Amino acid sequence: MYEPAEPVTEPGTTARTETSGGRLAAGSLNARHVIFMVLAAAAPMAVVVAIMPLAFALGNGPGTPGTFLLAAVVLLLFSVGYVRAVPYVRNAGAFYAYIARGLGRPLGLVAAYVAALCTRLTRRRG
Image 1 (cartoon, rainbow, N blue to C red):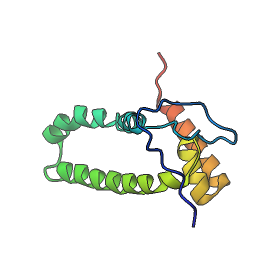
Image 2 (image 1 turned 30 degrees about the vertical axis):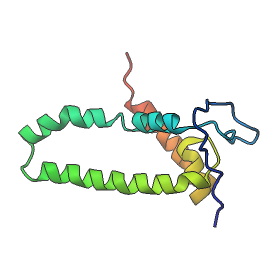
Image 3 (image 1 turned 180 degrees about the horizontal axis):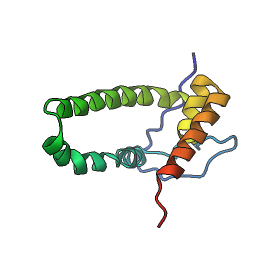
Image 4 (image 1 turned 90 degrees about the vertical axis):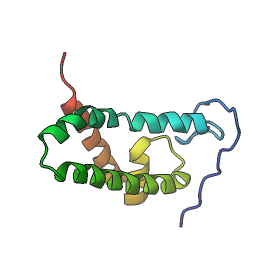
C-alpha cells in the first residue's frame, strides 16, 4: 500500500513553487486553496442550475429529478474516492497524476489526451 503524504496543517501559509520531481513543496496548499480548487471544479454546476427550470418544464416527469439524484450520487462517490486518493499522490499533475498512479502511466497519458481533446472540441471559436 502507498504511504500517505505528510498533511499540510499550517494555518496562513501561502503557495510556494514546486520542488524538484514535480512535487508540491510542503505547506504550499492550505484550506483556502483547496476550497477554491473545489469551487472551480464545481463551476459546471452553474450550467445545471441554469437548465434545471427548462428540464422540469420540458422533462418527462419523475425522470428529471431521478437524473439529478443519480448525478448527485455519482458525484458523491467520485468526491469520496478523490479525497481518499489525495494523501497518496504527491504531484501537481491534476487528474493525470491520479490516473497514472492508480492505473499506470500509459492510461494516465490516454486520459490526459482525451481530456485535452474534449476541452478543445467543446470550445467555440469566436
